[in-house]
Image (tube, rainbow, N blue to C red; front, side, top):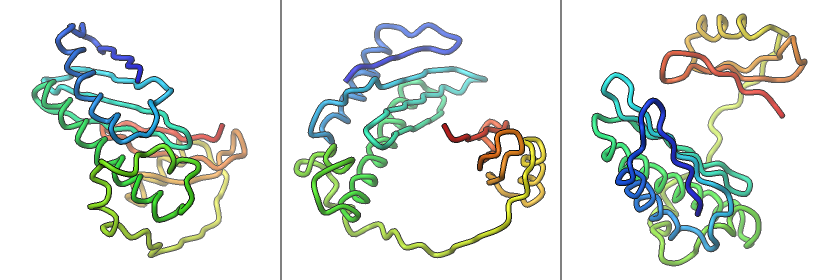
Length: 181
């Protein structure tokens, strides 16, 4: 596994880099083959909060986790724990959905992981379906509509590119836009 570790507004020390690599290497036990893509890690400090963001692109999926605390080492521990939960959850979903051994499911190791504990825990039952007409609008109007209905995301037809887009409210209070490639 290759690590790309960068600090945002501060210098990453060798000790911190070693700690990140040691902790994230725990995730390798969940995969049959080494991850071919780079694991991106961003460390930042803002207003006394130590934040760690990790993104792991996989074949057909992206694992991403973010954690904040008052200590950088604690944030690293928390983000690794969150990634382990995501991997186990994703593995459980794949086991239920695909009984064959191809695709994304084949990435994960069968034995030696804590996945079997979670096999029965999650049910992927669809409990609600909603449909609505999408009026073409620009991004700013979509943000206003999202705020008016009190949601943290809003699906809309973008008047600029004629495609379905999603605006969402980020944890920092700002807004994001998801577009199709």
